[in-house]
Image 1 (tube, rainbow, N blue to C red):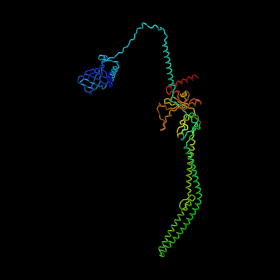
Image 2 (tube, helix red, strand yellow; image 1 turned 45 degrees about the vertical axis):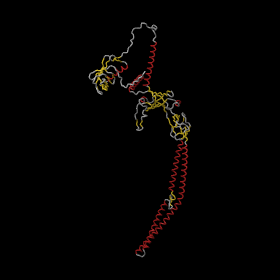
Image 3 (cartoon, rainbow, N blue to C red; image 1 turned 120 degrees about the vertical axis):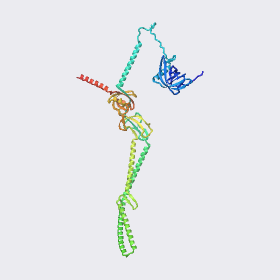
Image 4 (spheres, rainbow, N blue to C red; image 1 turned 60 degrees about the vertical axis):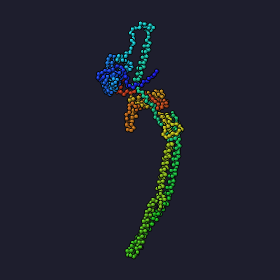
Length: 538
């Protein structure tokens, strides 16, 4: 046996050979060889034939059970063969009626709901077996004439139970949706503090275990840091060195201050010598001036030679220069004598300067002060080498292992403050309108399987609306859980230890009505109740 595999059909629509009459533009009518929703094929058409790409108007007739269903379509010639008289047309545009009608015929023909009978499309009828309306001549005599309808009773009871259950469930659902509001986005909250590593070092535990109860100021762990101890010793050495330098500068100052008494005597002596030299030089200049005047007169009378007069001029200039040197020396010694209590000049350099020694003392004092500050800073850091509890509480998590090296600012542990835990429920903007202060609520803790009564103590609608960049409130989507409600649990001290922060919670609120209609109805009933009470009291 030879198996032939045909290629899959690439057509977009089913093509059928059911009877269809096509009337050409010239009035000639032909039966379609095959047709589909995309086009029609005609064979045996006498010449002439329209050319490829030409648009023509066709009238299609579908014979259905003795009736002709006709409609007009526009088609484009896609194939024209004069030799065989074959014409292939593609529908350019089908009206909605024509498309639905042809699609209905093709689908029913493909499914077998229709068939062609003598060039007519007919619907295939499904045979139906008729039911006899005559009574049974031989009824079953085994069934009792008057039997108990157990089946009817059972079905009635079943339907009644189902109806009662449905009614009860619907009542509970209506009550829970109108009078109660269940919020699953809630959590147990309590003040928490995360302690971090103040400095790099090795962690030595004292009470460093999860669940441990600690008191305020109690030591939890110690920190060992070799670099810190080395820095502390270095700062102590620097402080000692700075103190030694300060004492040495102070001793130098004292020694030079004692020497200044001798230097002051020398300065006064130098000033007296300079004054004597200046007096002597002035007298010598006066004598030279007198000699100059006398020889000038004699030279005019030509009683002396010019050389002798020039010698007198030279001696006068030398005397004047010596006087100026003596005056300069007197001025210098006078100035140095005025500061002889701080400085001394030995005619070449300053051999003593108490101001410079005072600067050295000040510099040494600054170095001592800086060393003291750095040492105090390290000493204060010593207090941070111990991790202590900031308040009474319980360690709820430990992030680092004991006896390991930990870097600075790394989280070590988290402590929960020993206070009454509260429940924080997160609601959207529609739900928060139905909750009020001091409302009673029920809190269910799935982790503990307990129901606890609670009271609303805070309602915050804008907790997450604040815009830190612009310092004003910005509205958010109403479906976001952006409102926070805090509830106080009604528990005693023994239960506080079991309830820790982070436990999931489900809160059931008594839902308030915000509709104006409910308020009006409530106010009417309230007034009537008040009137009734007032009449009763009268």
